[in-house]
Image (cartoon, rainbow, N blue to C red):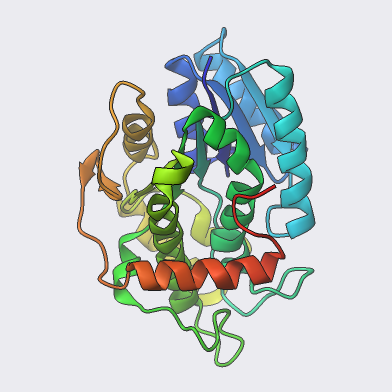
Length: 283
């Protein structure tokens, strides 16, 4: 049985992807921030697919120590199941913030959760991904096309702009995916980014306030059900095919920002390694 790890799996897109993929016969390993929400999410998946193989782990992925802890737990779980490595990792966890807030390590929270946690978790699980010649998926956004990397101040510590911090975090995810694909000939791992479009979820109403909270409550009403983008994740995980593009929406390849270059991807990889104190993909 092929194993898929999904972050942010207790609601919205992550939960719908977990439910859909569980129904297609994958072993689902979900990650959520609270034990209660993880329990409810597991019940939701099993209500649709009573025979599904589903396991949830609790972790606050904003904190690097939590990323490394849950990665160790997941590695032990997968090895204990006697599986063939990790078939897919879906980096879906994300947040929006109205003001400048930092993690315990001092990193801006949108940068930490939307991007850096995905970098570190992918690194920690990379040996298992290599074993299975697996796939890494990132939840992206069309807004990545509206910005450039702010190399001199990645975390917007000067003149914080919430929307620009969010847009940049999605561009960074694109660059990480591109960087993984640059090394595919050696690792065998392939990366994709999913643009879910406008989706009716609570992401803009969690721990936000003021204008961000108000605008999102109005805007999300025009969004599609999370079930719609979940189909693209299933499409990209289908072992019967291996799409050759990088960026997809509604199961179709899309154009992405010209900022997604090999030079920028390698530069970001080097910066991220320093921030996390690791050498990507190496044990």
